[in-house]
Length: 594
Image (cartoon, rainbow, N blue to C red; front, top):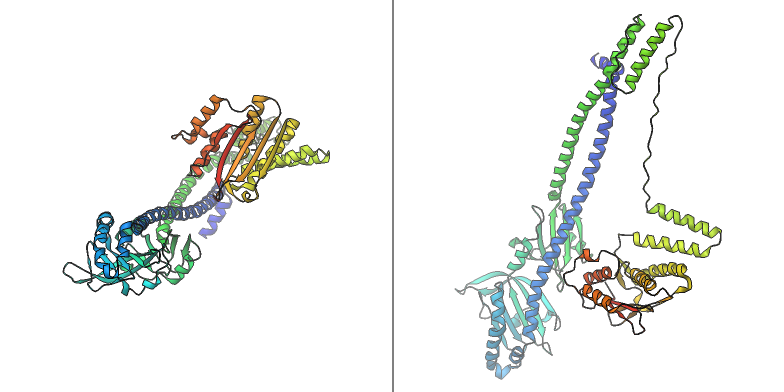
């Protein structure tokens, strides 16, 4: 049978055995590499898509919050103006006198606001005593419209908080006095000492929709706004206005202020986040197919490259195997001829590898056979011993920690408590600073890290170094940048001993100075800074255009850079001076909550 002949031929051919083995090895490696590359690239693409969507969502939220904040600021300015207070007080018999303050309100406040906000539909001022005025720059309000007839009027929250409502309003008419139906977002605010005055602003969601159109990652991604009741309040597609969001999706988003999840009902990825000051959420929906397209493209590319590599490898394997087996085949034929008594034909030596050594050994064997034809000769095959060079192992952190543990154990055995404690402190120092995942820590963690360092320094210098440390109880749980205290102590120790050479005392105090701020103070009894040094340091600390490369070395400038980039308050950053006692003093402030 042809199949049986093929199998027999394969069994008797070293060439095809080598080709088969090499192909199986190469194919296995390519398949494994392709599988894991495709898997991890798919995970990376999905993760990057969600991160990109979150960035887009944050930027859109900033724009939305800025836009709504402008309207809120206008409402606050108008509600606190003297003109509006005058208008609100002229009610009842003096209602006609309210025309003048209302005219001033329109000229000084409403019209400038309307010129910069073309989406404004109307602005209504209403007082429960009966005074009511309307301003509508484009569409008119119905003649019989009164805000007092709004069903939701009694539901408006207390003074000072703005209520948001969305509806399709039929209270407007065009220039021909024909009723028009408009999509309206209403902002209502109650103010006054007795809460009797209302300010209502109706806007079209056009500007919100233009912001949402920018929230479209992928080919089919869409962004929209939804309120706490699950009603869509703004959407790039106007027909979705006031349509309800699916209950299962809304339930998932109600679990947290922001996040992302895969919505299995439509195979979409939902990314959402609260909008400050409102009960709205901004949402981005990305069809998983958009992400899958990139994954499929990479998968097909990986499979194509794998197939191409397999073909090239097969050709290369055939060539290499043929090169190896060709000389073996020639040697095989020569041995057969020798078996038939042809002892005078030596083997042709090609190359410098094992096969050439075999040919040389065979030729030596022929010479031995010719010299000792009547006795059997044992062929001696020279073996080459391969010299293996071991690669130098990299010393990682685990090796360092294990070494410190060994030193600790040895110190324990000889009852050297100082060495034992120092190795433990040093190991904990390395572990703390080697953890790059966390960039923030509590004051408690930082103080513990600082105490390990100070204990090592005290062990090193003995009576020449002393310190005291005081931390108020309310400061322990405050959050701060990681490794922010120990470098200041290290700087004080280094420069204190360098300049004075005598005994050094370091005082560290952490205390609460205001409701939301704590102060950290490092002070020593050294010689302090020279006037030129203080002037140089303050110049660098207050330089506005400094780049991170100016502060890369761990020290005062590095810490100042980290504080000023972490906190925007003017209180952030280092303050350097000489204390009244003559030593150096460094202070900085931190908020109670980062």
